[in-house]
Length: 284
Image 1 (cartoon, rainbow, N blue to C red):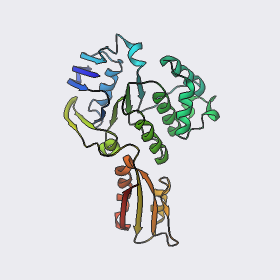
Image 2: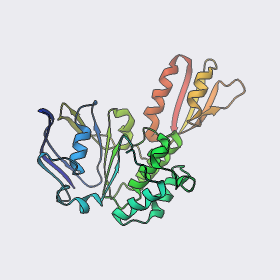
Image 3: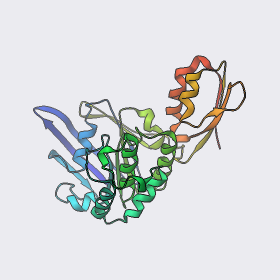
Image 4: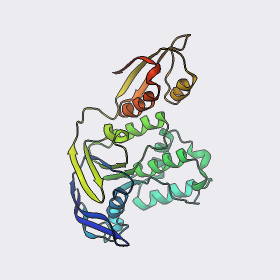
């Protein structure tokens, strides 16, 4: 599906990629992890045909630079930083749909599933949207095409927990016929989404390993938390997760979280370890 062969890239005498060779098959969900400067984004840009480089990259046997239209028509890309586009949202959707021959309605429908009121912002410039709105729209554009490859750079960073759950559901619908590369500097952000981890450091692959694939993207966990005492900061932290007090004293809190978000949720709870008397997360 995707082949990198001895890919190397130098910027101003600095070796950013140093002989990367990888084979990624159809249906694999890859976490591309590493600290800032490890080479993740540069590797993605090479895959998208945006950079010249030494070595070769092929998607279904096609070079993404010399076959740009054919290759990019089958790739959905969610960048980490939204582009500063002044184009109105409606025009951006229509333009994006025309590039890959999809129906703009598909993009509208996915955006609405993510909780974005598309009709209310069609005439607004993309650059004037909030960070969360931009992220939802970019995800809708990427998932609204018949993509064989999804490349996502920190895709859920600006999404609220409810939108993240819907995002996981959308990915689950594409598992059988789509290869996914999800870039992040933190493994806990993406570990439940993937079945392979590739770690980069100093332009090299330092880890390439299969991981357990027991958690489905549509898993939902019942959450129950018992506190030693009530703390307003704790209540504020859980407000966006739809975890609410189940008793008058506000010592027992219950709700549901998306299975792939369990590590992220536990990271939030770790700030209040001294308050928690009991915690349970059980599958529905």
